[in-house]
Image 1 (cartoon, helix red, strand yellow):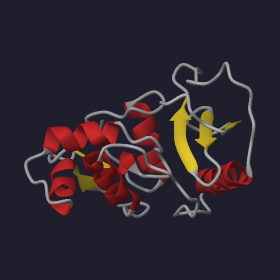
Image 2 (tube, rainbow, N blue to C red; image 1 turned 90 degrees about the horizontal axis):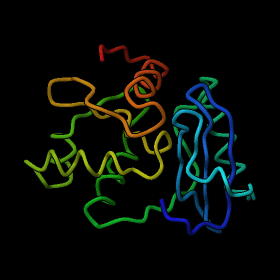
Image 3 (cartoon, rainbow, N blue to C red; image 1 turned 180 degrees about the vertical axis):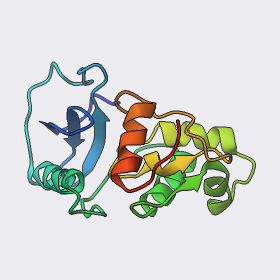
Image 4 (cartoon, rainbow, N blue to C red; image 1 turned 45 degrees about the horizontal axis):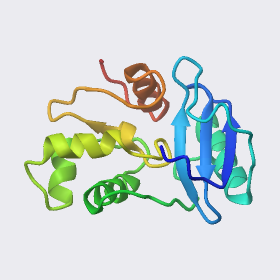
Amino acid sequence: MSSSFSYLLRIPSPVGRIELTADDAAVTSLSIARDDVLPLDDHPERSSAVLDDAAAQLEEYFAGTRRSFEVPVHLAGTPFRTAVWQRLSGLEYGTLTTYGDLGLAIGRPGYGRAIGGAVGANPIPIIIGCHRVLSSTGKITGYSGGEGIPTKLWLLEHEGITLAA
């Protein structure tokens, strides 16, 4: 994650502490603690209206009362990654897709490995639902947030989807 951010907020969640960053207009990153460590733990918090709104929406999501996010996001990445992330942002609560289907949707069939890399590099997980992507066989192949696959399984089960790891 870039160390360039204007605002920083940490919140508790059922999947571990969450760290949000934002610029003046939008959320720029979301990190889930791994072994209770966050990337910017050594930086002081400085919230903003955007981060307060994102935190409230995340709390509603975890409480089961919110199924979509209405907070502005700023996605910084290559055009390819940005296209993947924009497609991910359209995935609805409780729905799944595959890396192959994502590739087809953005006009890049056969780019499964690159799609996987872009999904794994999603700077704003949960809000942009990269946990909703599985392999073509329906298996969970990994998750870059929090404690990895257990975090992904928790998020999917929270949305009513039960799978074997």
